[in-house]
Length: 159
Image (cartoon, rainbow, N blue to C red; front, side, top):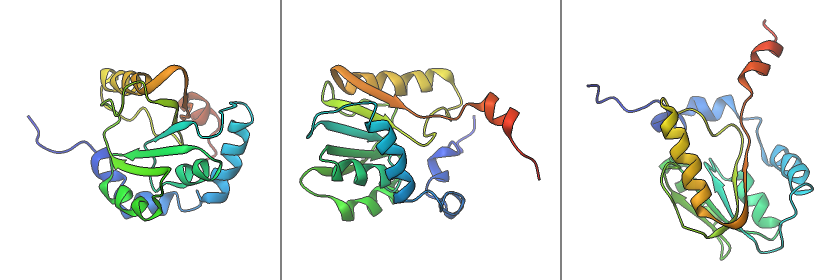
């Protein structure tokens, strides 16, 4: 049996990941979240989890919109970076999305920027969904953004 760690445990800490997505900045996050928040009407001061928050660009914007935000990510490097932005209503924790973070606590869980679906086994993806659902208050929102592989392959332009 291999003792090698799954690729995603180190990928999000690698310089290649940050190089690949360097154009994904706070302006892109603002535009995306403004569109999303116009459809999902969360009351001010709602408790929001940014699941797989990366370097926190979505967390920071959601917090500026008046939400009480908790960002969680598997990457210790990302969380250490995000900690500099913590306030009374913005916190960051290293956490594996397959485990429940807090039970019946959040009004919304946002899992954005294709931060889902990379586990090798479907039951691990199911555990992540179940953990996110368990974190929500009754009637809360679980918003997930992921890549439509079939559409991407069909529309992909080759060089």
